[in-house]
Image 1 (cartoon, rainbow, N blue to C red):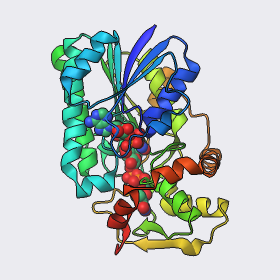
Image 2: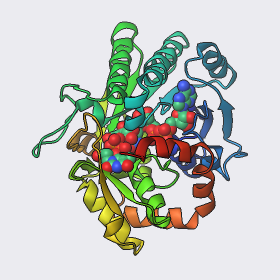
Image 3: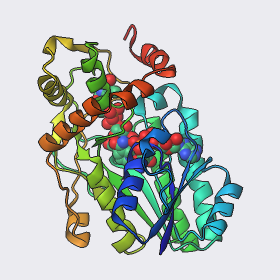
Image 4: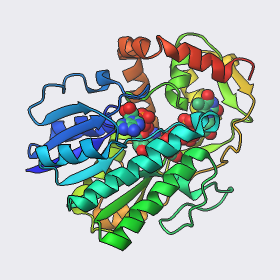
Length: 337
Ligand code: NAD
Ligand code: DAU
């Protein structure tokens, strides 16, 4: 039986990954290690808390002693590192916490992987490490790293550390760099759930700048299947871009959401742009498609409808998430913008 440590498994992508593994793999034990920051939510794991192959432990990836204890106690063979501060706008107002979680945290895990001689370390990175594109071209795995935000700079630093541990100590690693994810359990600070939540309550939809920024959207389940393939089939030392070939401007996405929810386009409000806003991301995923036989299962049109349905059917999850400190944060970001 595989015995994996999933960090950040109560967040958006991590919880979807844990759900997928526990639902589809009978021979994998998952220790789910998460600090439960504002973005971590045990409700994302509803129905799986008591699963025989799942153990949730609250903790910080910067705490090396606890990480090593868990590795010994649960006989962990591999780590998949989802844990991170993940929101670009927050990294612009509060960069320091990004360095702690994303750089120091990754370093701490790498030391444990090296010292405990684990079989594999999979770093969940992002396409944002490559910087921004003009109207042409796509990111490939050897596009030079050129991060623009404190978030992407912290993720790029982590990628360099992972490679350095491979080079210096022979740590067996993979790095995945995925485009924008969307789907169930995404916290409504990210564009798609934020716009769904606002539209549902007839609030303005804050579009940064001209709204013609382009992202390449991938349904979260498809990201998770790619990560599983990397963990189980990829040779050590390989880096994989993951993306859905679904380039859309922000305005296109927002109009789709409004149309589906039968809300007027007059809800859109163009607000002050994000500082240093990357214009376009696009992923060339041919390496993972050709070498590992991965492919996305859903088109954007199907995935976005599935996602909107999920938010409509899970009103309780959404209202719990947007209660408490959320409104304070929202006002600090969007009032007077
Ligand atoms: P998220 O913010 O929803 O979840 C992050 C999780 O990490 C939370 O549960 C949080 O509690 C936990 N965490 C944060 N700091 C921690 C620490 N020090 N110790 C332990 N746990 C900690 O993020 P997400 O969108 O699910 O992203 C997961 C990973 O995927 C991140 O590494 C992110 O950089 C990467 N990624 C995200 C996207 C995307 O579109 N969301 C795309 C590509 C890559
Ligand atoms: O590309 C992968 C990255 O995608 C991940 O590494 C990050 O963790 C993830 O947060 C995401 O980053 P983005 O900055 O692209 O995602 P976000 O949802 O914050 O914004 C998507 C686009 O929408 C971007 O062009 C900014 C814009 N936007 C966002 C918000 C929250 C708006 O116009 N208005 C908004 O209110």
